[in-house]
Length: 295
Length: 232
Image 1: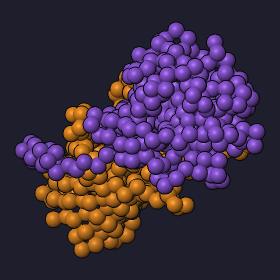
Image 2: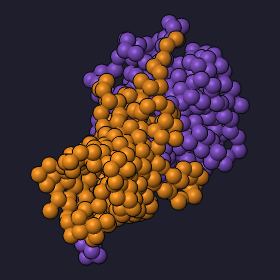
Image 3: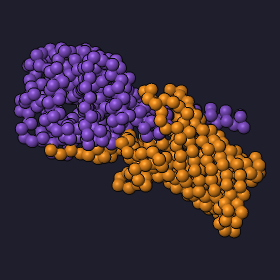
């Protein structure tokens, strides 16, 4: 019996396959051009006409992203005046796992209306494999893509003390990682909306048992650990009724692990994963973010 | 202003969720093994397929999780078995189980036969070389309800987690994951055909998870399994 078990174990290891869940985290769709304002498909947030951004202040930018030699041309949108990046404060927004930048167009516009129309510059990127960006989405590629955006902003004169990182859902991984592990610029502040704690928490929430995440995925998206390295002021918002990433097992863990100098938590009653700005109230949302950036 | 509700979002990111459900595979991945002990000296191989129910494409379907089990009757009242979870194997995880089924009560008329099955579940992944061990104990009542050897059974599986902490150093609050199962085995020409319904983790909330479990309510997950056994 012992021999049978040993043979079975060794044979199993040698026969085991390489299925992983990693790529399934990224629900990207590709496009040949961005619709932006002309996108009439449902988005998480709809805004009235007063939020429209003048065409002259909308810029589509190709960027080169290098993930340890794996190069990809990715696309970014910048809402604001390119000529004043050297003096503006810029919110670098990392979107969630769905589709591409078009799906988050209204969210991007909303940020560009905080403190007044185009008061802050707002930049967002499509990670590799999303929208018009080339390559395939990966966790390390996402971090490299974030760094490509930061590099571009630096080349336009932005300094770290005017760089605000904002991550929503999946994008919380890029925002947190690049705040905790700065590259070309050290961001000034971090804003997270409905963040993951980690892939491991996702697995264990589903499994009930304390199973290693490596049984399913090589992804880390470990905001719970990366936030420990973050000293910059931190703003966290999460829907109490988040039915995708539980506020208890994800958001609260990230917030609790923050060990920096200033943090604020906004637990939004009745809000789920995608509707924090709406349920909180757009004006409340904008005012809170504005106050955080200005403090 | 309008928004997409969170559940819509979770459907959209569904493929990841579907596969994450395989996380539950480890507790709900297979039907009950040998409910009735084999005859002394008898060997059997079982292939099983099925898993927790999920919503997919507007329907509820079981995750198609598979496993193979070999059993040997050491005594007429005691069968040893070893199982290999082939779906887990496809993910580079060797998940095996070693156990024994002991009959503690022989069926007498409508009084059911009773069996218990202590089992050790071992897992090891080739990616980060992480290993896990979870003890399990099952108990079943079975009835042979006619002159034919077909039988129905009702039972309970119990997985135990002795970890004090989970990921990120958070406390592991769940140490017992039960499941209730109801099954029927059709015996025909040396083959057993089993259909089993399982209610996994009936006391645990299935809300606010990346997984959209289908269940009787807001707790647990329902599972459907089929198994085919060849005895010799």
